Image 1: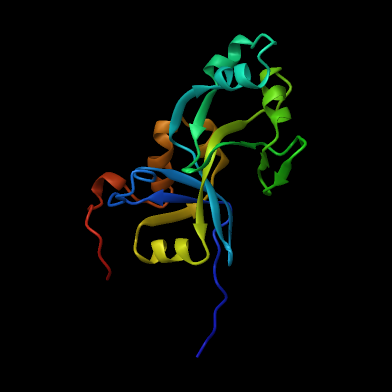
Image 2: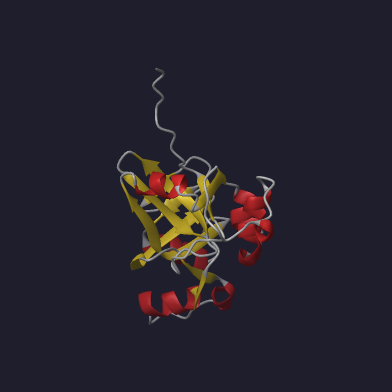
Length: 189
């Protein structure tokens, strides 16, 4: 009998299958920041929160004027866990007070990255979210086995270059899948 090591999906997208009933995750595309034996963490990258960087900066530095460009920078709902905590995925050319290297990306959780973006000195490509999606040990693997998700390697082009409402279908298309043609019924072959 052959033993195989578990396969983890860090720096992959999770594509919600059409039958996903959980309203927190229906029709979402998630970038997996971490996935290992202890569990997984990711950010939903196609669900705007309705807030902009202006809204956040008015809370963080209320005595300073907010540059007009911040009004057009959306904040996304990264997931249902710790929805008051901010995460910024960005191109890796800069480090901030709390930056984790993710290989082709950096992820910062400190306010200085937001201030740098607002002041025009931040990373050239960025994605800002409040909250995250999390799975306990074995939970994501069970959901994958139940056909709740498809996975594919993450693409910075999909993350940064496409409008949010095109990201889910673009990730599925990278696998040759058209989500509109999939059944909402769950099944196993």
